[in-house]
Image: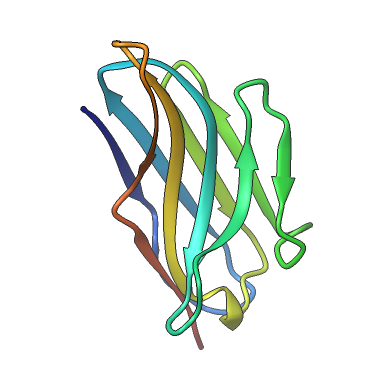
Length: 120
């Protein structure tokens, strides 16, 4: 089994910053792409940012220039640095990872989600 554990969410004022972390653990051979998604109330889950194992990155247009995704391959951890936060960034943020298990089976895993609230 593989688990993804997120941390770093919370309540923050507009314009401030937060850093989310997500660590993968368990029977892992290799973690390939890792990503952050978010889902606001009443809306569909959307991709925020994604980083490959070779650190190629992509971002949703709504967060370009404000959010930065990074990863530590040795720790199987992905981060999301969120700067200049806006009220519309309020959502549950979910970590996603494409994991090759020790049995060499490829599966996409999800974290439990961490809530980010941007409000004055």
